[in-house]
Each structure stands twice: as C-alpha cells, then as structure tokens.
Image 1: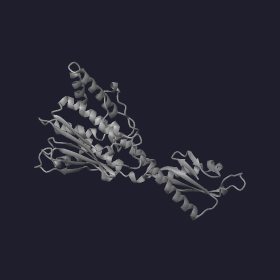
Image 2: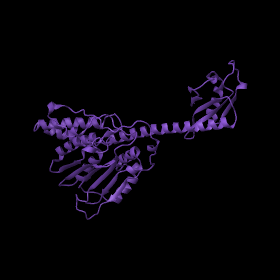
Image 3: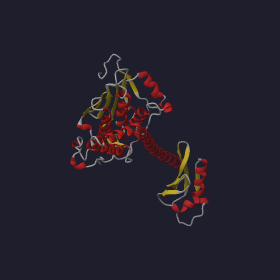
Image 4: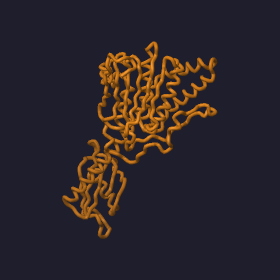
Length: 378
C-alpha cells in the first residue's frame, strides 16, 4: 500500500514492489486530477525483478469534504472485484480519518479564535479605571496601591496567557478574585459585596479558559454599576456527583428575558452579549450539546448565569497549575492553594470522535425570573 498527498508526493509505502512507484506516478496524478479510480497491469510495465510481487495495482482517491485530499495505492497479486472492494473500503476508512483530523484541527483553530475574541472583550474601561484607582492611592495608601498593582499584574498576565485553551476552576477563581479586588477598590466594599461558596472537591475541574471572569465583569458592569446602592455578587461552585455546577449571580437591575433572547439571537450581527455567546459556544464545543449556559433574569430580579461542567471529558485537560504569583515577602496568602493536589488534574490522552460535533447555531437558555421576586432572592 502507498499513501500520496494532494500534490502526488509519496508519504508512505508499506510492503513490497515499491520499485514500481515511479511507474504508477502518472496514474496517481490522474486520480488526483479527475477524482476517479485508476488501474495498472504489471504486464504493461517494464520490470527486471524476478517474480515481482506486483501483478496488479489500483489507485483510489481520498475524499475530504468533496475534494481529493490524496491517493491510496494498493498493490496485489490478484485482480478483480475483490481488489476493487478492498481498495474502496480502505480509501473510505482513510478518508474518514483525514476528515476527523481536519475537524479536530479546525476545532482547535476555532477555539483559538474565540479565545482571542474574548480577550479583546476585556473592558478597556476596567483597565483604565484600575490604573486610575491605583494611582489615586499611591500617596494616601502606598501599601494598598502596591498590593493592587500586583493584583493588576497577575490579572493581566493570566488573562493574556497563551498556554492552552483550558484551565482549572481554581485558576479561574484566582483570576476573578484579583478582578473583584480591583473593582472593590474602585467602588468601595460597601457598594460591591462578594460572596464565594466553593466546594474544595471541584477546584481541580477543567473548564475553558476565561470562562468565569467575563461573567463576573458582566455582573459588575451591567448588573450593579448603575445601581446607586450597589449590591452583591455571589459565585457558587458546587459538587454534583459527576459534574460541577457553577453560577455567577448578582442582585442588580436585571433585564427583560425576551429582549435578552432576541439580542442573543442576533449577537453575530449586532455584537450584543458577545461574551455570553462566546462562553456558551466554547462550553458546547468542549463538553457537548447538554452543557450550554442557562441565564435567569428579569427586571428587578438580578441575573444569574449557571453552567454545568463534567469532572472528566476525554481530550479536555488543563495545563499544569500556573501559580506564578509574586512572593512579596510572604505577605500574600493564597487561600485556594491549600485545596489543590499536584496530581489533581483530570487528564485524558487520545482522540474521541464523539466529542467533535459542534452545533451550528448554539442557543443559550434564557429563563425568566418571577417579576414579583424581590431583588437578590429566588
């Protein structure tokens, strides 16, 4: 058997009679050009090899998405329907493997593009306001300014890292902790209150990179920033057997669920709620159709975004934990570090075709909260 690429270049030959590759090169070019099977009879070739194992050969195209991606050559000592059928079956198998490989590559490219788009969504106003807040504290409280500057450096380093499309829940929680510390310094702890309810068992769970911070930023900017008295953001990560259930909730102004559905349906045109759509798409790509976001909202009832993440999914694993914080003479305690096990990452090798299909138009599930529900309660 011989495998050739779309340019006719020999990639591999397994078995005997490879001295005839040059003799069948014209047939390979014809297959690549026309997409049709070609047959070669040894009797029509010049051969000085006694008892040459090749008596017949068939060259079949390898089809991927309607185009000829290469050619498969099968050399045999017999001819007839059995050879034709064997060649067709082998070509079908190889074509499927090539299609899966291309789909896997395009999936990785899509994930990279989506992540770049999400990084671009990190609010320039937040970066400006964070630096302005730090600058205002340089003279009045230099120690706090220093702490905030280190938090800002850690936040930006993590958010713009290039290592891998997945991370651990613990790393994501560290990142939103830095983000909220900076926002509390700007708004004041009386206007921006934070509640974290985290089960240590789910800290090593793997999820797409930059999944939580955009949800928390939405809660601050759209839920609480316009509310005079401020409010509370609650982040919950609960153990649910084979899954982790994670939610980001604010008791802010909320919004009309019907309007949210309409805006999400046209987000690819208007750019509205692109962060929600981006996160939803990446969850579906990583874990399947059953793992999209659920948004609960209504006027005066705040907003709650819920996601379920499987504790294990073949082919989905995070890079090694990235605890790259400044030491700062030991005065920066890491509350989550003690909950992590160095061997706690869920890792899986290999390729799982079942995890590949991606819905063409994934939809977020938007649920209306009761309008009469008091703010902050469900």
